[in-house]
Image 1 (cartoon, rainbow, N blue to C red):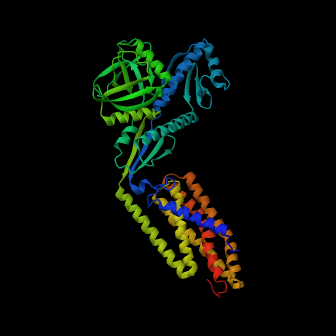
Image 2 (image 1 turned 90 degrees about the horizontal axis):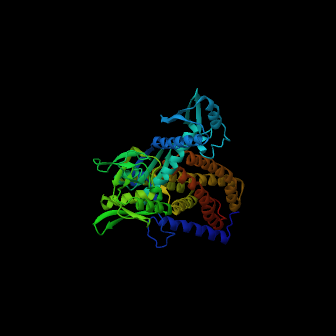
Length: 517
């Protein structure tokens, strides 16, 4: 029946008022943190920067193969099997063995239960494939192994990118996967992306290594240039500590030299290694290397056992802040290359907002006029319900601090049409019921009840489409599906609770009228 209990009326009233109040926080400032929420505008509405990053996985694959080469050599050395001419070329490991060892090598790599697997899980056949040509062997990653490696690298890179952008303080960044080697970064409100580009373009692989003049260093040596690109030094490949040992890094002013420095603190393992290296290396230069460039190479004056130190290198406060940020966020697993960049100005975004608001206003006004002419008082009820429905929809988006895009506005406009469509179905069904039923209350109740199946079926099919768009789509498509999906639930609530409540009140007071609709 059209009857609503006092408890149900109270629930509908409080629920509607709550979301109207939440939605109004986009216009007014509230002291309460629960109501102090806002809908965030997407890149296409408030302007900002769009960066498409591509992960260079070649160094990652090379590093994995180098590690694998060492493990292969050491493993078979323990088995008294000699591996000859082992080398890496074109992302493959090549080696050859004596005739008597050939079958042992094949058995080791083809048997999934081989005791080599605990040493290195990537030896498993589904991730590495072995090619036997005579006495020569080739190890390489399978397609599945490469996909697994790239996916892992991408997941790590996304986490590091998110940390770096969060440290900069960019509002509501959108960071998404693209394939298995690309990352999309949208930065709403940021119209000067140079600093972010600089931060994202650095791998931030930090190592501390001794400067040496001994070319016969057992760990090997390499020549690295200083940041000025002119001077260079020979450093050992032995890594004393790396960025993984850092607990924190902060920019500071050195009161003695009046220079900006970066102070850092190490974890327990790093502090122990650093203390040992500085105690045995007094008088030596310790190179601080970032992305294969020497930032500075101070001479060790005394043992540093406190687990903290400082990096100097003629920094400005901004460059020291950025370096500290990079070190805190961690090193990227692989270099990132910016392959596409776009900047949307706020004026263009404002034009989009204005166009969307005008479209919504025109559509809304036309709907209001049509419904009022067609259904009179019930058209007015529908129009009031539409306004409340919009506030509830905006309130839900505000509650979750969702990001609104131009396609999202299109979803809201579509919601208005769907809400009207539901009311039209109900009112037309009521007209049919009134032809055979003299009791207005029974006719109206039957109209709501018998039209319910058609309305719910239509909304469920739309919700399924919105769900598919959400999971299969990306970016703007997801924004459209979110507003459309939420709009379906708010529409059903407004039609069967709010509009029906207003209708029941009017019909109950005018039940004896001959023609209500």
